[in-house]
Amino acid sequence: MEINTFYTKENWDYELLDTGEGEKLERVGEYKFVRPFEDAFWPKTLSKRDWAEVDGKFFTSKKGGKVGWKLNKNLKKKWQISYKNINFYVMPTPFRHFGFFPEQASHWDFVEKKIKNSGRNIRFLNLFGYTGIASLFALRAGADVTHLDASKQSLAWAKENQDLSGLFEKPMRIICDDVLKFLEREVKRGNKYDAIIMDPPKFGRVPKGEIWKIEEMLPALLENVRKILSDKPLFVILTSYTVNSSSLSLKYALEELTKNFSGRTENGELCILEKSHERIISLANTVVWESA
Image 1 (cartoon, rainbow, N blue to C red):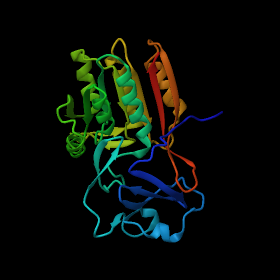
Image 2: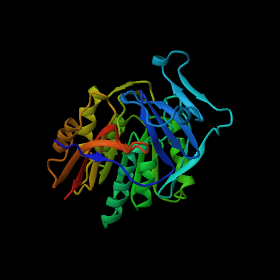
Image 3: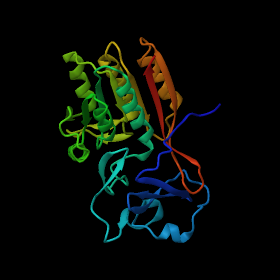
Image 4: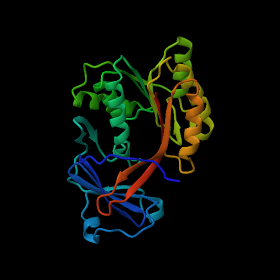
């Protein structure tokens, strides 16, 4: 059975240059980095010199030594990149990320196109919104955006990105809260949303220190999302980076959530097109429901 792959072919400020031997070589703006990619069982395509001449490398405990980044002294603390004129800051974080997930670019395109072509006012909710890039595409398309995350640092970053993209006058409500508690309050208030995107982590802590575990929390999350969908929802997107998750499992869950609405569901893998070998590299499972 053919697996759906979601990825962009656009040339932009990010490139996956090469993969192999448990690592990936990336360009993020003007800088190059090496990060772990345990699924890359194949040999590297580019030369040892290409892999050595980088501005930073993230080490894991599997490699021995100190865990974390080893960065060049001349590297900026943070710098700006853009995708289709949405600007955002990036920097190496302690969690090996850069403050954005490039494989989600195809979702950013989908969000903006669907909202822009809807011909109506759309209330958009971004759960686990991180630094806000999907929210900015929804905002530029004309949506009334609610952006939620449990991390104050991520939300401050999202606000910076909003200002950097010149969207500071647009209606984006930024909320620091536990997702489940927020959704429960929204259900009681009777608030409804037309478009929802969610990228729940495998594990994390909410503002008051409670533990989030996706295998325990996902059913309650989806049930509350169902209760806040409007009478005419536009789309729902669910993505999971959990290793043992399946896009089929996500599809069945989302089909159950949207069973009272007319539309179609597409599941598959979020990917990036590798430059050196033109392989389509899978990084997450995802499912998209959109109205008919």
